[in-house]
Length: 257
Ligand code: GLP
Image (cartoon, rainbow, N blue to C red; front, side, top):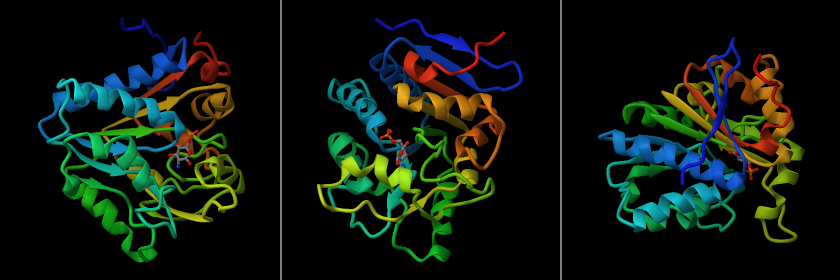
């Protein structure tokens, strides 16, 4: 049964906020939004995200594919980011994450999915933005949010006009992601990420946040000022953003008057 979301919009922001009771409901809701987007488009172009938050979303997409209800054959996808210095075969790379959670299980041709080349010289990373543009642009960009308000790997201080580029990871981000690496292996210090302008270039943005650990970042992003210190707050500048969250993540969002 599809849960009934409660939707709250701040009068001054076009961001749509969908609050569901549990993380499981929020994950399924986000997955079904992606599914609707894919089925509505002839050539869907997806911006994809990694992180623990997305694992169940990809589970749903896989299940629907396996049930014969959803095809990725016409999709193209561009991932947000990748760690610098990790080969695509490294189990901790986002390329491996995407193959494990989605790509190896669905019918999207390998040539259709892309991640930024993390070891490309900075000057050639703009090629990623060009590839996105040549594909027709991002139709739906899926996003998680870091506890410090990062999106992709755009850390506090991110430039609103940035395209795909190399970033130094914040120590708090490296600590938060340490669990994705084997014991004793350091989280890389740098990554390649779509920039804020790349993300804001998407037609529609779908941000999924679950759990109490995301409540502060989500409140700053949606209810606070638009500022570089909280990169997710730049989403307030976009005119078609849907935030899907559970009650825990929504706990600090201001009630709409
Ligand atoms: C990661 C990714 C982001 C992700 C965020 C939250 O480092 N670069 O794209 O949204 O941090 O991750 P998680 O879902 O594991 O909390």
